[in-house]
Image (cartoon, rainbow, N blue to C red):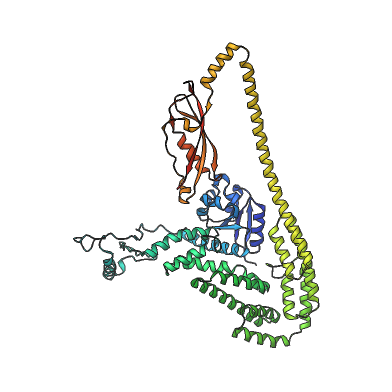
Length: 614
């Protein structure tokens, strides 16, 4: 009986994101998609998935309350968020990155996605194991603070005594009390029953304090998927700096270990598929990131050595089970990737001897049959191991001069180009480009490759143009609505003027009335302010040193109070909080009544531009 797959809840509004997640995870997990929050609750109750994956649109629905509702329904649920890169600013402005365990940026990378899911499942398991535990006795946390200078007459046992005495006092206390005390190390708590906690104040070095400050930004970058250079404020540079300041920082070491796995990307998949060029490219990329970062380089090299050991073990297992052909294919990959190695050289010699006793012709015939079958059934590329490219790579390693290999590559490349065309028609441009690139590596004609790439580019441009046309149509509709409103207002004004002309006397009286009731447009400099409360600088923008301005329109009544206060424009347009802050301030203003040239008190319309600058 096959092992039951772990279930994952997928709540996506975007079909493209849903298909991408399913293509990456469906072979290893039971991914159950929900389209509504109600369906999500039903799946959480019936399947009890430990983690949930949401796209940005789903997470921001219900006024951004979706994540809270899910966690309210299942507190131990661990969530991952898939966010388009063009929504990064909105993500930073919201609190979503703090409410979710990890953030992945589309287009999704298979390697990073699998790593994030594995880490989330591990976190969910740890989180679930903590849920049933009984409530621990209330204890005081480690108090880490810079001690104040002691007064010359202070008692030697005072907590405010010089920090130089703390280690001595702590040592004497621990030796005297034995197992009664509590010890606090690296933020972890060890509880001794029936004991009174002893608080040891530890003065941190400036380097440790700076490392703690950097840790906040480093974790935010890590959780938001900003992992490596050349992106600014990336997690790798931040955690490397933290270790330089605090070499024993456990969290930084743990983060660099995870980053080393992410840096190597899909190297395991490439090794499994026999694609040595792609595997070497992944290794070179990871080593390139580790330049001038000795600690990270050591982790990368350790991980590479582990993969080499795993590959050698796979070769040995294949030989032990009699699968000499599999062993030959794997040792070929190992030899190309890891070069001179005593174990690899010994295994190569052993495989060479065993291959001599095999019926090579039968094996080649089997590989030819399985290659053709894989092409005919559209099993073209990884992640399925029994794919055409895998069998062709094995055949090429076993018999490089076989005349059928060229034909198989032509057939495979043709099938890949057809798949690329289908994917492009379905707007799956990422996989379309992947199929074309694979066909190019198989030796497809440059003309065919160029045609397909142009076709993909054209279709992708068409989709973008349709989106732009839709946006333009919405703008035109809005302009039409504005014009209708303007025409309506113009008609009302014309009707008012015709009615005013009925009688000269009535027109004179109407004019007097109009002068007393119709506002006059003035510049803000023509008004004398009485109360002019300055606006509050939005905290979110002030922390990020964002400048801007807002233009506010207002009406000054005859008594000097303001009315009809509204936002005209905001610069930059996306910084709406500037407009809200300016609007709130202007609503509290008051002025001296405005008088026209004849000395008549008038209602005045004006505008004011408020600048926010640090």
